[in-house]
Amino acid sequence: MYFAPALAFALQLSVGWAASISVQTTSGLLQGSQTNGLSTFKGIRFGQSPTGSLRWEPPVAFTSTASQNATTFGPACVQQFPFAGAAINEKIFNTPPVPESEDCLFLNVWAPTSTTPTPVLIWIYGGALTFGTAATPEYDGSSLAASQNITVVSFNYRTNVFGFPTAPDLPTVGNNLELAFQWVQTNIAKFGADPKQVTIMGQSAGARSVASAYASHAPGTAPFRAAIMLSAAVESRSPTPNFAAFNAMATALGCTQAPGAARLACLKNVSATTIRAYTNGASSGTWTSMVDNVTVFSDPIQRIRNKQTAGVPFIIGNAQDDGSLFAINQNNLSIYLTATFGTLVTPAQVRALYTSGLSDNLVISEVVKDFVFLCPAELWGAAAVGAGQPNVYRYAYGASFANMQPFVGAGAWHSSDLFEIFGTYNRTGATTAEATLSSTMQTIYGNFVKDPTTPPAPHWAKYVPGKTTTTLAKLAYNGNVALSNVVQAAESNSLDSPCDTLWNKFLDVRE
Ligand SMILES: *[C@@H]1O[C@H](CO)[C@@H](O)[C@H](O)[C@H]1NC(C)=O
Ligand SMILES: *[C@@H]1O[C@H](CO)[C@@H](O)[C@H](O)[C@H]1NC(C)=O
Ligand SMILES: *[C@@H]1O[C@H](CO)[C@@H](O)[C@H](O)[C@H]1NC(C)=O
Ligand SMILES: *[C@@H]1O[C@H](CO)[C@@H](O)[C@H](O)[C@H]1NC(C)=O
Ligand SMILES: *[C@@H]1O[C@H](CO)[C@@H](O)[C@H](O)[C@H]1NC(C)=O
Ligand SMILES: *[C@@H]1O[C@H](CO)[C@@H](O)[C@H](O)[C@H]1NC(C)=O
Image 1 (cartoon, protein in one colour):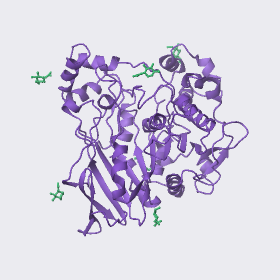
Image 2 (image 1 turned 60 degrees about the horizontal axis):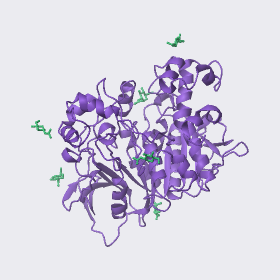
Image 3 (image 1 turned 60 degrees about the vertical axis):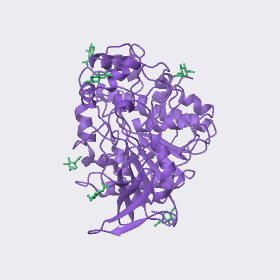
Image 4 (image 1 turned 90 degrees about the vertical axis):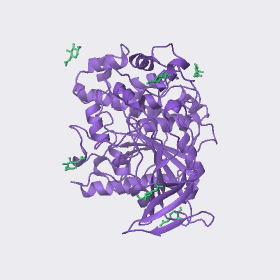
């Protein structure tokens, strides 16, 4: 916390070691807690309850002058667990289940005590835009904030049909969310942090949201100065929305009017519980963001090349086994490819891209890792460097620990790096190497938040695509976990050959 004289602060000792602390914000006079120089505020309401007439509408700022307790997380937004991977996703990301409510627009702040304003990291969780909450213990910001002397903010955004309805009944512009970024700009100085030094970081669908924010803000207009995309970026996509899932839901819920105001009124009148039962049932579709040409564009990579984006420094990369979670129970390459690509690619064509003799399951895991996670990182890095952005840092994360394997064959699985970054890894059975790596990862991301124009770790050069440079940081491969050796500098396109040979032509409109 920054003790600015102009700000109304009250610090009172309460029982034991935690003190109560209050901060005046546009959300009210917040009562948080302070321990060992770290102030924690949880469950800060930043958006009005998005229920009733506000369901599916852009979020509306919540303002208050009243006193608010800010000591427990707000409820998660309504969750949808995708059907094929429901059990494992619930086990990893929702155990024990967090209370849910449609009234869920809350954020959390962890702020270290400091005599000068600290830089800010805003965290955006993943979950395919269908599930996720800032209250997940894995994403607790206290260790990262305290160890790095940075302010960490996490927030809830509406997921699945509640946040990404893709509905013909709604205006195409304004379906999406940027209210939390605005709250940080308005209020974070009151916590002793600097709104001009904001980095946004997301993983998986959260990284896609970071990428969309990056691509949608024109140069000089972004409410952040740097970005971190962990295991995902946004590819080129069709500008044509697919309304099928919303239309099917409307019919199933008895709102049989033609798309438009009357049907929307009918659907806004259905209880969230009824909608949740439908979206978690077998006949539901899934929802995703839609191209509105305001917050989401169909051609983000081309926008980077055209210098139409935020253009700020970024870290981008993927985990070595990003595909393993998605390949669970997928043992037939031919069936997988037909379901995913129709007739566009053949099993023989795909097998030729990878080490011969891999099982179908392992080939599928490689395909998911490349197509969904690694190739978009290659394309984004190359586009940004080509457009003259000097501070692009690319990684591949390779650490795998025996006590962090939630399923057989997980490896360096999708999300495994987050436990190290947040310092929330499994303490039971943790090795010294795991503790060291967590500290190293925190230092790397802390360094970048403090100064995104300097390489965040030794031997990590600014990214230059191609065969003649070693600017791809292989992180924590071969048991290298100390800050001095965590980066193994590799030929910058050493992992990209399946992308260059095949996948990029589906991911980049220019290819
Ligand atoms: C905050 O919590 C305290 C302790 O639980 C309670 O006494 C107080 O009434 C609460 N204040 C508000 C504004 O809810
Ligand atoms: C924390 O960061 C602030 C702002 O950058 C700096 O002034 C302060 O010295 C730092 N505190 C510690 C303990 O490093
Ligand atoms: C909302 O539901 C109530 C009963 O549940 C019904 O009386 C009312 O007509 C509904 N309104 C709309 C706009 O469908
Ligand atoms: C967005 O722009 C694309 C390409 O210019 C266009 O095809 C599409 O209709 C636009 N979408 C909206 C919602 O304006
Ligand atoms: C994969 O599925 C195809 C199409 O159903 C089938 O012809 C083939 O035998 C299956 N391969 C294996 C290894 O089971
Ligand atoms: C933590 O590690 C222990 C020991 O390997 C293991 O039994 C337990 O399942 C792990 N817990 C989680 C949540 O992964």
